[in-house]
Length: 194
Image 1 (spheres, helix red, strand yellow):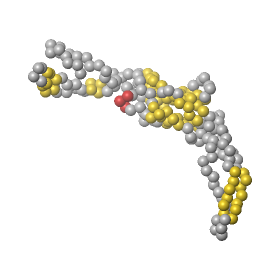
Image 2 (image 1 turned 135 degrees about the vertical axis):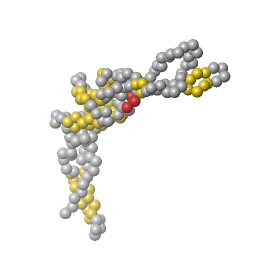
Image 3 (image 1 turned 60 degrees about the vertical axis):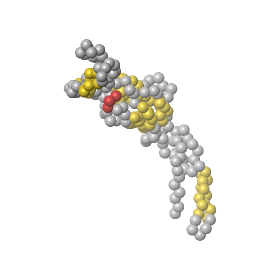
Image 4 (image 1 turned 180 degrees about the vertical axis):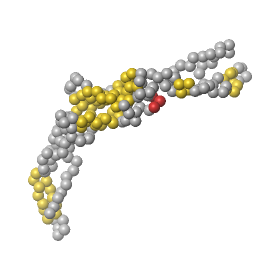
């Protein structure tokens, strides 16, 4: 802190964080050195303010069919700036002009799931997440593109054939299922025998 003239008996402390408890001490100094600090003042909490830090790591995707899963890194308590803290989640289909807005009132939340039967699998959405408290709405994150949940494969693999390679082993082969924009990529196959 800046040194205050010895004839001054009060100072304004600036650049403090909103809604944080502080205590203060005063230290006298002269050309010989610095004396002992005063006893700490009583705790004083600064006034609340609108939050200014938006959530980070906006991500998501996955989930079930007809779901849009949105996740984020929660804002730490010292950056919430007041009581009544929560999150504002805004999303829209890519190319749309109308945002859908949802409020998540839980401070600890880091996820929001939107369910709607009209969402087609693997649809891209523009998403941004903001913050609010009792003082008002704060900053929104930058826009991230997140895809809705995939659907299960709609067709069976074709061209299945089996070839005996030994008395105890059979090699099974098939044609892969092509990638489909609506059902997504195939993560694996299950081979059944009887």
